[in-house]
Image 1 (cartoon, rainbow, N blue to C red):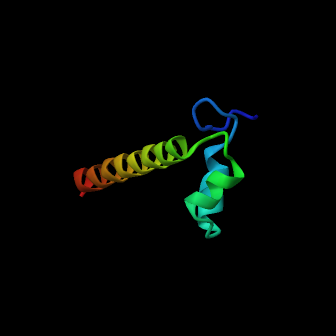
Image 2 (cartoon, rainbow, N blue to C red):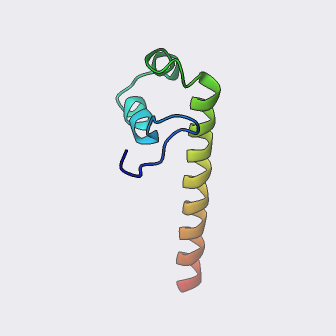
Length: 68
């Protein structure tokens, strides 16, 4: 691995999961591809990613409003 963020307790990069979702794979199908990860960890990784994106968007919006 090259320092990419991975799902906790695995060597599966989160980028791989997001890429599969972007390609249209449902989470259940991804879980079949990576059964050792488990649905709870997959869902948890996505929830964490959503939180990160949400927080970054809020931060960017507040910076934009502060400079306006």
